[in-house]
Length: 506
Ligand code: MG
Image (cartoon, rainbow, N blue to C red; front, side, top):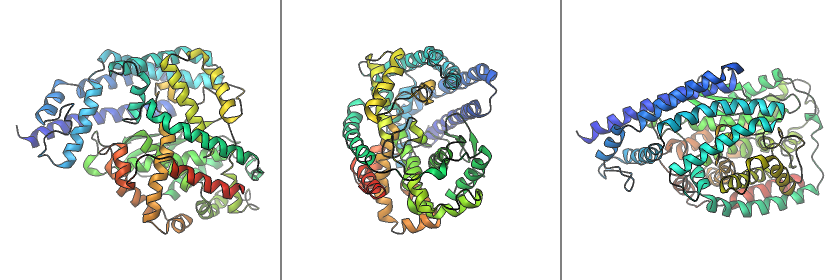
């Protein structure tokens, strides 16, 4: 068989696997948005079935045979040198995914998928009831699955490295800690400087804003940012997220707290940043293993760039403020765009990660990274998590949550076994500012465009420099291609320092 025919066969298997994956994503999306609570158990079984079909198809002998005939081996994943570059990049990713997936036994994959659905539902209830003990057995189960997964992959004495590698290839505990340690020191010191200064006036945000009012504004906001509502939609979930159900169907969610309007605004902007990445995946790699972000860190670089660098900037609020006043009449009559800008940049230690300001945000991540490290090294027992959480919150942020719902139970990730994911957010901040340096150099009118709400040139730049590659490049390769640099904490820290020194007069 010639190479073209072999590739076509491989693409066909891959395509079927992606279709199964997206069907599972739809069931997941429904699980987190509309599923009645008693439907969870059977839903978990449905998901486990899809997962097992996917696993069987993807790890079939046919996949292995095709990869080999195309010259793709573990040592030479890009295969035959005569193939076009796109196909060689494709083979590299297929080989990587295949090598990982085929090491997992089918009954393990099915059991894990089934347990994840049930565990996530248990977490929703436990968080609602502030009952860590009710979630504990599920959490222990999830840790056990994660540990076994990493061992199957061969990370014998470095279980946590194996989990980190899922989200950020080639970044283990050592690499991440060497970035996080100086980051923590510099951010803690800046937070202390800020705490000495008077807080900006946020009193105009203390009012209650009904879910209806917030929903109306958030719908307008996503359109303002350039989200094509014929290619996706916004719904409500316990924890905001983005999921791709099809090349023209990317779902985002937010949540509405009457006493915290900013929460929905910034989670909508954040999830839009993820959605733009997914929607810009080019036609030629759609429904293939290349149709995703370079890594979760790079994905988060896009969401956090939109949420913070754009969404918490002065030009952005100068442009958006009239729309806010139009959607919510009278409430902001005596407020200026600049006051609103200062209020959305209040830097003050708080309990909830997703609502944390840009200065303290990474400290929330570093805390979780250290806890995960302890869980998988055996230094921390699962039952000790709530108390160690409180101790670390006191040490890093100077505050202690009254409840576990506002502490260890606040995030969804552990409930479905996503250990190793959290560092992506902080790495995303770093990647984001490195990319932003190049974006600003290329688009000199950046601030004017943001003030006008004309985001098209920014969308185009992100698509042409980052999104169009999908998973063709590893995160480090992409960063080098776009910026010519290695990963660095400096652009992020310089940005934070400059912005907050101005706001707080430091
Ligand atoms: Mg995100």
